Length: 453
Image (cartoon, rainbow, N blue to C red; front, side, top):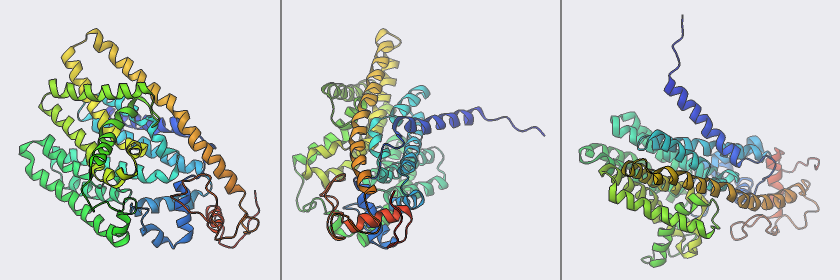
């Protein structure tokens, strides 16, 4: 019996998926270079200080993320001190995220344009903030589930499949309990139906709205049950006491609009002047081209891309604007907002190519812009690697110097460890917690000493 020939489309998508998985590993994975830093230690200290269910359900500052906490617990329990494996998992999750984004771009842009923009996203240096610190599996899980919900929303728009509607609700729930950045972003899903579907899709709009509202309300109930209102106000105590002023709007503008375009040309938040110039020009030109020459569907897509970027920052800026505008440029946010920026850029390029034909500008501009974007990602990587590498060396030295017997630690079990590889305002680590963390990562029961290495 002869087997059926392989589907060329499936083979192509499988090959592309493999490329997307390999790209972040090749770009960001540096075996032996990194170790537990910053928020890794904060969450590890909570693991060894609380029972499992208490650890999973407790808030992290203003964020409640039981799923990613459980995943991080399982990974550290399974792999312990082998931090490289945790980072490899993050790199693969980053590649999967870029692949989902590529599949979405294919629905709206030419195949080659979608592939190029998807690869730029998968190799964007901002991803180092998520792939070189194991703790940030939370953002990777959050974004992956959000993009799956977006793909299912597009599928539901085409087919009205009830299974897709159930999948949207599940992915929204999983996204929210992984990290709360998408708390308002999930409402871009019914708006996708409303804006891209047109007037004839009212029933589908209501269906997706319900699929988003149910997990949203369940999350809110869980948040206030396990985290409480004090968690929401933990960073900005006056978060709802008064109407936000111009600093809120400035924070929102930078985070939602300017930051992602700067990250297109330089992958670190210490941007050179030319990245400001090119990023600002790309934003203005993209919006101008779409508004001036785009057809109705392209204008709708551009509007939705702006909403996609703007919605989450309505909440993030409210929670963070009092702490300074610099946080609007946090790379973990840019990993999300780069999606909207690339949708705008790709849509503008498609329109410009159609409008200008095959003239010299059309032939020369793409290679120049691509070279600047790719060069900006590659040459900004050393800044990230130095930042995380320096902290990792201090962290590893500290960790290897711990004595599991609890003697000669430089202080009593309840004394605080001087900050070396974390932000002291975020974490107050004691010597006792540090020793218990080493026992936990080595799989040693509490109170049992193992030979020092």
